[in-house]
Every structure is written in structure tokens, then in C-alpha cells.
Image (cartoon, rainbow, N blue to C red):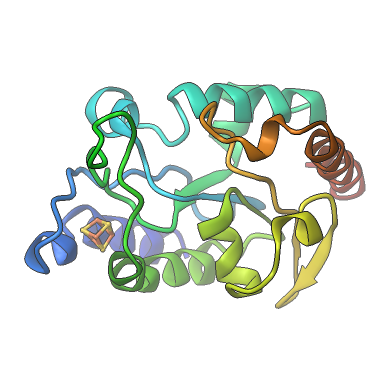
Length: 201
Ligand code: SF4
């Protein structure tokens, strides 16, 4: 699968679907990891830091919080990045939102345009564990009608994979600040620690 995944990654790097459809995304597409990674993290979309400076998924302020959470599970950042796959629902920086104080959320259409890339990554990497991070990634597995409180803090088996969802770790997220939601996050990290131990990840 290594060769096929590298070919796919080249195709993703050359993708202009959103630009051609009139969306002001800013490349390059951001993702990282190799074939046969046993765990895949799926976020929403890269931010300015990822697309403009580091070219690494989850390397801005939200990424710092995500890796603090993973640190509680027992995963150290460099080792995690080296061993696991990190991608997102849309892979190009969507640009700022209208207020200019945050990032624009990718539209439904952009999510649809980018979805075949994510599906191909899932097929070729074939991870045993998936961690969807944030509502958009969670919708890929659970549809649009489930509430985060019903999903965060639980462990699922979907299409033969273990799925442990996490909320978006953005500092702007009011959801993660609520004490009752902190409990759910703690529970989700506990599930990941068990999965890590069970599978030797
Ligand atoms: S977000 Fe996805 S579909 Fe849109 S241009 Fe980037 S890689 Fe292509």
C-alpha cells in the first residue's frame, strides 16, 4: 500500500478542486503519516500556522492542547507524529472568517469536494483506531444529528475500526470549557489509554 498511498498523497498535493469551485482556500494541503499507521487522527481543516508555517497537522494552538491530551494518554508528540497518520475533513486552510478573528469553517460543498481524499486515505492506511477530532470529523462517522455529549466519552466499533471521538481542542471552543464536558474528555482519554494498552500502540 505504500506506493499507492504515496501516489494518493501526490494527487492530494496537486488538488485544486476548491479553488476551481470558487472557494478561497490557501494551500498546500496538510496531512502527515505513512501507510500502515495503526491510528489515524482526523481533524476539521488546517489553520494558518499549519498551512503557512509548519506544514504539519495540529501544530497551532489547538494542536498544543490536542497533544497535551495525548500526553495524558501516554503518547509523546514526536513519537506520535512519526508513527500515526494525521489528516482532516478538508485539507487546505479555509482562510479567515468574516470577522477576521478566526478561521472560516469549510462549507458543506468543500467537505464534499475533499471527502474522496479522506475516504481513500482511510482505505489505503486502513488504521485499526480512528480519532475524529471535532464536529465535522465526527459527522463522517456518526451523521449530522447526534449530539457531541452522546458521543464524546464513549468508544465505538465502526466498519471494523475502534473509533474514539474527541471535541475540537480550539481555545475558542466554549464546549470544552464546561466542567461536565471536561469529564467526558477525561473519559475519552481513558478509553484511548485502554486502547493503547490493548493494542500496544
Ligand atoms: S480542501 Fe481538499 S478538495 Fe479542497 S482544494 Fe484542498 S485538498 Fe482539494
